[in-house]
Length: 157
Image (cartoon, rainbow, N blue to C red; front, side, top):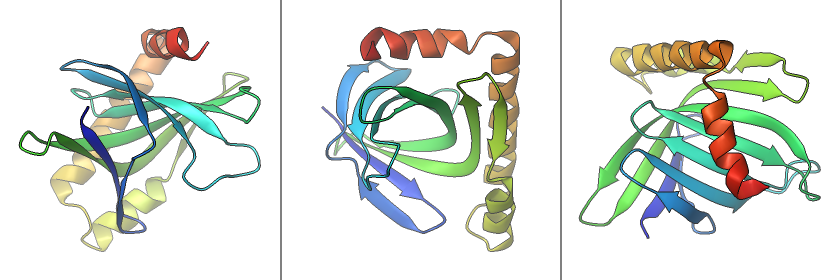
């Protein structure tokens, strides 16, 4: 199994996801389950689907009793190192939440702007994050997003 790493820009950190379990992997997707790195009152665990070619990480957030909280979508880029069989997933800061009531929230665009202003991401990465955010929103609005949630739910439920 490959090693997985989560790289954040704000704050600047790269953390090995040692406790994530890979349930499925092919050339275009990786499905993992995990427990939170820093436990919170409500969020305890979840599943994440890395859609490699599109630059999405779609997560099913759950509480300690396996109750659904929300779909949390990170916009990412990744690097694969074949020699070490490892992936580094860099969070490109823009996030989309789909709440239980169906409402949609786009968050952290201020962090995306801040990262660009501070030189933490390039203009090309800024554009990539915005294009991927728009593409994912279009999949959500059109109903195509369901293919991702169905895939995750086949393992989670």
